[in-house]
Amino acid sequence: MIVLMLIWGSSYILMKRGLESFSAMQLGALRISIAFLVLLPFAIVRIRKVKKGKLYIFALAGLLGNGIPAYLFAEAQTGIDSQIAGILNSVAPLFTLLTGVLFFGVRTKWFNIAGVFIGLAGAIGLLSADSSDTFNNNMSKGIFIIIATILYATNINVVKKYLKDTDPITITCVSFVFIGIPSLIYLLAGTDFIPRITVEPGALRSLGFITILAVVGTALTGFIYNYLIKISSVLFVASVTYVIPIVAILWGMSDGEPFFVEYFIWIAVIFFGVFMVNKEKSVKVIDGHL
Image 1 (cartoon, rainbow, N blue to C red):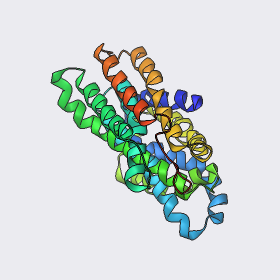
Image 2: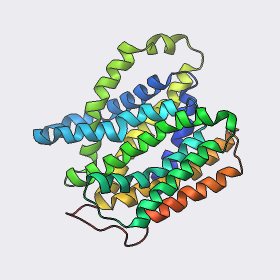
Image 3: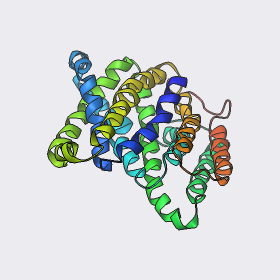
């Protein structure tokens, strides 16, 4: 969890650097494509061992866990600071519980559900804390991160329930096959990536930051993340987002991003909501999951 905290907490500043030369869609496609190419040798060996009837689960895990969120986070950071993006990601445990209740048969207490709404209130307050002039823009971009965390939460439950007997490397590598190929085709055929990389000043520098993001922040952490899902509860895995904001805030402040006193209030509200969601003995195990 500490390793994930340090890597994922740094991913927002890397996305910010990548957006200096590339569009949000290009950033998302690059992130997925590079990670896919790194994981491809492992995928070729392991995909043969996967039962054909389970391939759609891997495709779903790829889309929910990495494919769609990569584009959503990139788009979000075209309008909000990297530290705000990191803080908003801390609502993931709230949606992990909510999706578990709605779709995976999880039973819970009233105060856990209350925690979900408290956390969401904190997220909305955080987006409004900057200033009234930027509230609408913050909301329109911040909603992309909220959607991404919902997808993350659903993916955790999917992997925990349907891929619990599959090793983390296979989950990570095979799931990227289904999102990597379309992203690579889109990047090369559907964008101006090739011309931009040759003529855009600073494009190679931005590509370097995106490569670090893809290899370390996506491919490597994919192994760690799926391993955590395998050996622990889904809420414990989602709880890594508690500490990601600390790293994201430090990177943001070092990069000159403003930090308002009001942020402390709304961060506390979010964390209190997450605490309510994870309150001891609040979740019961049903059919072996959550």
